[in-house]
Amino acid sequence: MAEPLVKIVDLHAEVAEDGTEILRGVNLEVKEGEIHAIMGPNGSGKSTLAKVISGHPAYEVTEGDVLFRGESILDMEPDDRARAGIFLAFQYPVEIPGVSIANFLRTSLNSHRDEDIDIFDFQDLLISKMEMLGMDPAFAERSVNDGFSGGEKKRNEILQLAMLEPTLAVMDETDSGLDIDALKIVSAGINQVKQEHQNDMSVLLITHYQRMLNYITPDFVHVMLAGRVVRSGGPELALALEEKGYEWAKELSLA
Image 1: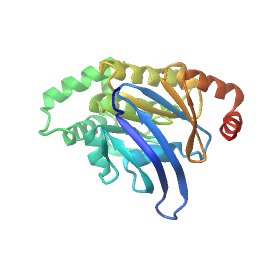
Image 2: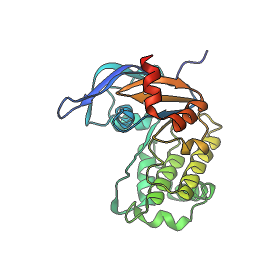
Image 3: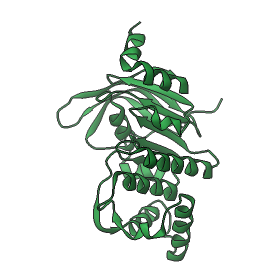
């Protein structure tokens, strides 16, 4: 049996500033190539889990561990985690006026490599990824997220995903703020990037709603409540949550 790419063991974490406990014993395993959806209401700890995996300094792990390829990543800096192959797509991508998407992506790509990529090779790679995602090359000339719509910001995240080719993609509420057309475009982009990886890329998809799972089919669905994973299942679990709500899952977890 294959070892998990990511193994989260009894993970407890709190807000570093005031000690408020958010994660209260999360256990989760993700194998290479799998898509796992984590669903839950506001305040359940979903986004905190994503940020703890990526090394966000606002949170402190007080107990448990996060193993990536069998090794703890808790002492690794966020940039080292990124170089190791962990990618976080933000729920609210930040704006960087004056920095073009192309320059941002080239700098990001070079930070992951032993030597800088040739400018012409970079341009060829960028154009090929944008063609794959059905994006206008002129998009890369714009400043990062400056004046972007919600859909444009999320498409930019998918372009970063395509360029950096991580082993683990953590998508923190990527569907947040998207209308149905933008949701379809972003979901198709995630599927295309994964397919280009020959499906070796693992995805941790964090969402409130089942609607994104109409376009990205998860292997497993997990329900988070009060800082824990309280129930796991297949895609049918997401459909049940859509119909019955999180109170149903809470009642099952207490039964």
